[in-house]
Image 1 (cartoon, each protein chain N blue to C red):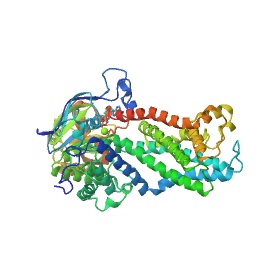
Image 2 (image 1 turned 90 degrees about the vertical axis):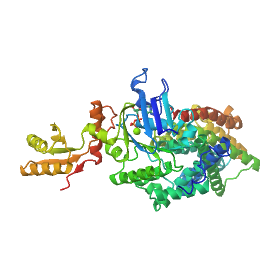
Image 3 (image 1 turned 120 degrees about the vertical axis):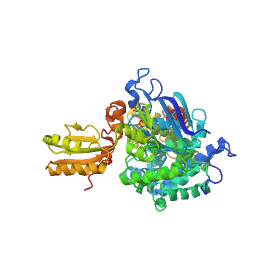
Length: 279
Length: 358
Ligand SMILES: Nc1ncnc2c1ncn2[C@@H]1O[C@H](COP(=O)(O)OP(=O)(O)O)[C@@H](O)[C@H]1O
Ligand SMILES: [Mg+2]
């Protein structure tokens, strides 16, 4: 009856490929879906990068000369790793919004009613978001480079720093998936900014914690975002401005430990939420 | 293979686990603390859909239609009973069921940002068709659902009817043996509704079995060869549309007069054409009765009232609605049990009421 279906129906039944093959193939198809979104809406990626780019220019030029980096160093050099980490941190909102949009529109239900690998709904999102994050980092780094930011360490250090940034983003994918399945609708997801904003402000992104009131400085120093920021500053060879506190002195350790801990907590939570869809 | 494409026996479904709340926990929270009670969304639900037919699942808001469809389409686990879809046991082999069914949920599950064609190709690849066949199939479906021209446009620009048709097309990618359609026309204007009806008819002509849920008796009547009425998670009637309409007594004429004082005059005029007792609703100044010859009755009543100079606010023919069926079967009106969002007027509010032609 149909040209396309003459052959064999497309289910994996009777196909020579195993489940593992389809888990990867379906994941890739889901990734392609996410990337095609950007292709059709390039404006969206501009919006997404708009905030960090504007922040770079605003903080770099408007406050740049007034802001002092404790221990010396150029504020713009100090700021850039913070901007990179902030962009990664805000990424969890994109994940959450994408997930809640798909779930309220019934797209996730359709995926679940299809013979595709159920894991692809989540893995496709994760891989797609990581690829997006790579693109974001490249664009931000290019912008930063254009206004004079340099890494003073070798190439391996810089690579390690970008790796840490992506690790943070990776751990937040699971927070985003969990939140996306938790909140009732895309409108509610907009309120996540209220969480994201302090999460990045009360950290070492813009200012060294040692310049904050004691209690706030402690919170900021322990913030997972700060650990990534401080560690990447070290790896890039940018001014670090450590206040000498334990979390600042062990930033490299924490910049791995925090994301690992977040992943360990939120992967099971997200999976549980996903399974709960069928209860 | 047996003669039934869908078979459900005594299905029990209760949302969430004990003490835990589901995604929309507030809904199920009524009797959450207790054991049994209002918490079963499906409570001994039976259904038998014959192969190659359209079967209507008719019920008011909150009756359990969506739950039934989601259980049968393997999206929800159930707690008791047995279900078989396309010859496969739903609980035992959900993956095999998924390769044989299609689902179009209550909201058009298409990607707003993609074009129609991109949507179908994407779903085709996820159905493991491979890029080349996915593209071929997308072309076929766009043609079948009359979306060839719209295929290159973003779905964001589609009308409600077009979106629904695209959604139907997406659920048809593997030419499934059984297709579940959950309220496919809710929220559509009459034109969009007609488009979807045509698409459904074409599907059945191609041999697909369709289980369609609806709140509208006339929709089930137009499309389905058999109707199951569902209430509080249980099937309370299972009949042909003709039989079901017979139990409610066919079409009605309805007159709303401008003044209370005119009610007796209207009763008298309607009584002359009525098949059964004339009913009045004083508060709404409404007089109605079952009639057999629709058009003759309407003309007659309109003329009589005009001759007497009775001021008429509204006059029309009304097909029996779910509300009528429901009242007859349960003694309750549909609005009574549903949530606050329930539309008490059912079909009347959605344009099934036919105005006077002349
Ligand atoms: N996710 C859910 N969690 C808890 N209760 C639910 C959920 N979905 C539906 N219900 C309840 O189950 C019953 C049946 O709902 P549903 O199947 O959606 O009815 P219909 O589709 O006929 O309107 C209603 O009482 C509804 O409130
Ligand atoms: Mg429903």
